[in-house]
Amino acid sequence: MLLLYNTGVQLYFIAIYFVSFFNKKARLWINGRKNCVLIRYQDSIWFHFASLGEFEQGGPVLEEIKRLHPDNKIVITFFSPSGYEIRKNTPLADAVYYLPLDTAANAREFINAIQPKMAIFTKYEYWYHFFNEMHNREIPVYVISGIFRPKQVFFKWYGSLHRRMLGFVNWFFVQDDRSKTLLQQLGINNVTISGDTRFDRVWANAQQPKSIPAVEEFKNKNKVFIAGSTWPPDEKLIAALVIQYPDWKFIIAPHEIGEDRIVKLIELLPEGSTARYSQISNLKSQISNLIIDNIGMLSSLYQYGDIAYIGGGFGAGIHNTLEAAAFGLPVIFGPNYSKFKEANDLIALQAGFSINNEVGLKTIAETLINDERLCIDAGIKASNYVETNTGATKSIVDSINAVI
Image (cartoon, rainbow, N blue to C red):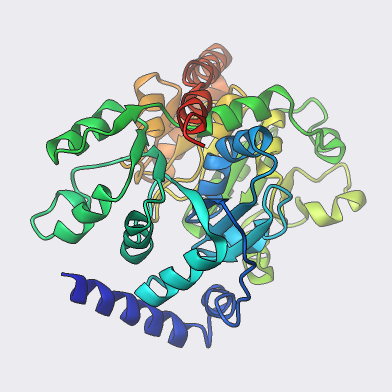
């Protein structure tokens, strides 16, 4: 099994290398791992995040650990460029790196350099050689906001190597009962149901959001529909709503903001009705659609909304519904949401709504727009849900802090 794993890792690297010749994200992935000079530390605390979403999710724990232990160096690694490129200069860390390719030699070299006293991984990402090296050196490994599903490789007949990785983890802080039960079925009992640290992050943000005066002026007491982290299939549906509801204003924040993507999005919308945020100083009164052409604003944008649509549900899976829910917005999203506990919970509370096509979106939007009381009630349920589920950060930090 280990031979197959090592072969798979190398084949993945080769595939990314060839794709990098014509794909910017793959090129960043390759180049970011070239000629990396590691700073040598003693007793650092290592946080690993797959991407930007996991960084935001684990951020509350990172901030609290740093506050409580200012003398310990903080090292952050990312697997994906979408995390590294945006947070490589974060003041929360003393060093930020791309995670080296998971080989035995890379794991030894990396751990020799940063000398972690512990490692904290958020939600998922299990790398055999890094985990094995830390296990052999008796360096504690913690998984926070973990989530497990029966279809994952750990629970398959062919998942013996991945089950071995789970055995290298000193403690799991999981989001729900199902995750704990699945781990216990494998004989893993070093598990605490702590919840999801994202609730702490989005709730704190909603209590003290960053003001965006230009967006406030754009809203100007109008009803606003905010579509966040959208992809082309989402945007085609939103464009139909723009035409149907000319009295509403629309803010669209695409997941990717390359020039070609922004141009194609503008072409979907009525001519002369749309502006980019970067050009908002030139806004005219007839502008009813605003496209966010930068990264990092979305979590604050929701304060100006009345209804939210979360993108990704027609692809690999929906993006962050909790940011909008924390501000008391009912949330709409596409059909691929089953892996996301919070989306299922919001649907059960009638605070979230899944759609399969344009007709479905128009039906839900019409219901929420025409029944203001229903819309407000859904938003209140969404906000209450987020507040009720805060507290994971304290639970995790109290446990980890006891052994630092």
